[in-house]
Length: 222
Image: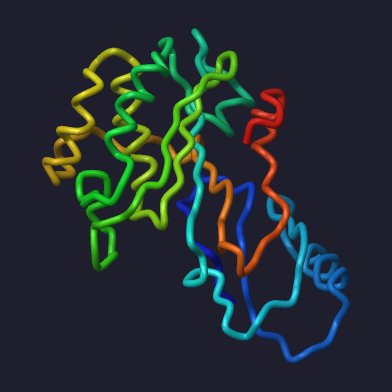
């Protein structure tokens, strides 16, 4: 059994794709219902479909999309803290968006990778990065061909410093060029991170993932 990618403990996923070989013939609905009967309550299979033998959940993927969610509140929220990262200060989402634009394209993301990252190359290609506000929520929406360990959480931490006004927007570009993990601060908490979509180009298509429930009121903007 192979998943499209791994996530850290405490990270959420609105979509995850898993491929496996089976020697049994069963209706698709039986795979879904049968698997769900054996899973813990915080994991649910939504669909299943037969694929070509050459399909691989990880290596066939052409892009992965993550959301990182901050919630602004003067006091620490209770329920929301399980699904978003608390910010006691109002964030400047426009400045965060400007800073994030410098990360689009193919770059050496050494600055934003974990010291324990085992990837052979630090180069990744970011296709898009947007920062948007929905009431008290500020969301980083980033898509790339692949991500390094802790890459999105470290990007979120850097953009958070910009949003709080502790750094200028240009600082993120300078940090990227430094290729030094020590040039940015601590990794952002896992609770605000969501693996949102995995893409396989025209070879394999399925229904788009719904946004995290905490952002559902934002409407169909995903």
